Image 1: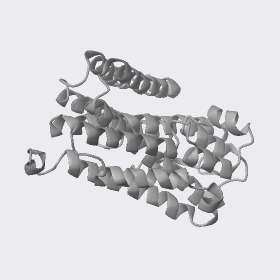
Image 2 (image 1 turned 60 degrees about the horizontal axis):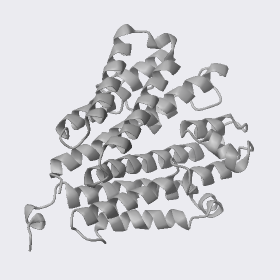
Image 3 (image 1 turned 180 degrees about the vertical axis):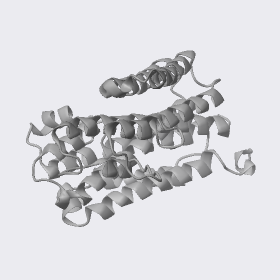
Amino acid sequence: MLQSRVADSLYWISRYLERAGHTIRLIDVRLDLELDRRADADGWDFTRLCAVVKCETAAGAPASPAALVETLVFDVSNRGSVLACITAARDNARQAREEISSDMWEQLNALYLRLKQVRGEGTWSIRPHYLSRLVIEGVHLFEGVTDATMGHGEGWQFLRAGRFIERAAATAALVDLQFRDTPRLPANHVEWVGLLRSCAAFEAYCRCYTADVRPDRVAEFLLLNAEFPRSVRFAAARVESALRAIAQLTGRGAGGRAERLAGRLHASLDYGQVDEILGEDPHAYLADIGRYCAQIHDAAHVSYISYPIESALPA
C-alpha cells in the first residue's frame, strides 16, 4: 500500500499536467481564431478565455496575445498558468520519485527545463504555436512513457484518477461556458469548431458526424460519446475504474463513497440524452458534473490521503 503522501503526489502530477495541456490548447486555438477578428468583436475574447481557466488578475484580462501568453503560460504567481502547473507536477514527481520510473522523471524534468529555456530566450512571441506544441507533446509523451514504463498497480491508478477527474471537470466547464454564452455568439460555426479543437476533438467529431458542425451534436460528442478519450463520459468511466481498482488494491473493498459518486456520475452520462440535457437546463446539468468531480476528489482524499490512522490498521 502506498504512503498517503506518495499517493497524493501521484494524483496531483497528472492533474497538474492535464490542466497545463488543457490551458495551452485553449490558448493555441484562441490565438488562431483571433487572426481573422477585430479586437473585442463577435466572439470569445480573452476575458472568456481567462474565465474558463479560472484566471483572475488585478489588471483584468490580458489586452494582447503577448500579454495573454505571459499571463497564462509563464506567470508563476498565477497558480493556473502552464509553467506553474508543470512546476507543481515536477515538485510532486520529486516527492514520489521512488514510485515513478526514471524515464517518467526525465521526461517531466525535460519539459520543465525546455519551457524555462523558451521563456528565457524570449523567442516564443514570434512562434506561439511552437510553444503550444512543446507543451502538448511533452504532456502526451509523459502519459505514453508512464503507461509503458510504470507498473499498472496502485500508483498508476492514482495517476489515472487524477488525470480523468481533471479532464471531466475541464471539458464540462468549457462546454458550459460555450452554451451559456451562445445567445451572444455569432450564428456561424467558427466558435463551435473552436470548441471542438480546444478538446482535440474536431477530427474525431467529423468521423462521427461528418463536417456538419451543429451545437447539439457538439454537446453530444463532448459529453456523451463513450469512445472519445476527452469526452466527459469516457473520463467518468476511467475515474470509476481507477477508484475501483484502488479500493481493491488497498484492501478497502468496493462501495466506498468516492467510488459510489464516480459510479453515479458515470451512470448519469451512460443514460443521458442530449435533447433532454439541452431542452431542460444545460447549465445546471454541466454544473452538476463539476460538483460531482469536486465531491469525488474530496471523498478520495478522505479515503486515501487524509484518513485516520486507525482505519488503516488491521482489525
